[in-house]
Image (tube, rainbow, N blue to C red; front, side, top):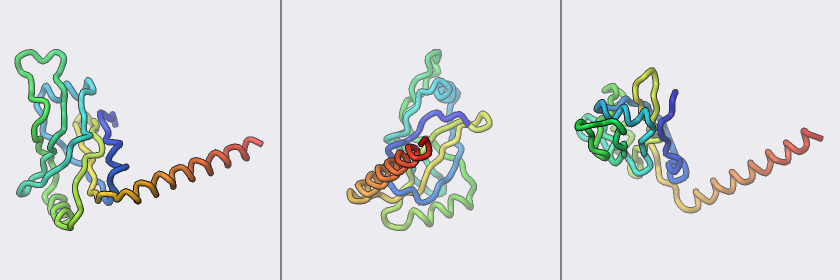
Length: 150
């Protein structure tokens, strides 16, 4: 897998409950811009409209050699999934407090894929607890590493 862009902020702001993978409908100049690494999914989210998923707010920069066939940088892009998966996602989203957040954008077998997660927002104390747990784990790893060397 060749990772194009990741949403590191998503894991800090949300509890990721389940992960999904979907294809994405793109124009030619968008794919070429992605190969140059000009993408941003930090402010994006995924919305269900009818029986289709759309990624909203994803920014794909202009391709350097685009010419007259340039694409618009930010617009809704359709995601491609099987109908059974869409019905599962629809049931999960109907619960209060659940949303779909893109986690990463990558190439898989020369196709652009979006990994997104079913997420639930963290409270401030959840964020503090996660940070504290990471610090404790890091400290334990340092102590163990020091003991192994001796």
